[in-house]
Image (tube, rainbow, N blue to C red; front, side):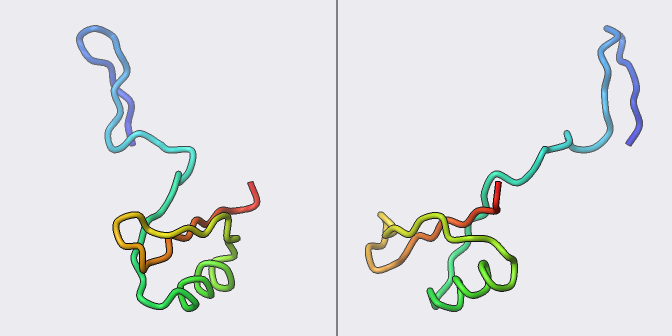
Length: 68
């Protein structure tokens, strides 16, 4: 990534703006227990909240987070 100035003197950067971290990840999974096992046991996140998907009441909506 290189820094440059445009005609107004404002700094420009090549590439995307750096992000301090991921806010959230959304995915759809068929088996709720396998989903929970992957995010908690494999990735080390914790289950923050479990609710029902408003668009499909037969589907869970899981929220995961790290220790922070």
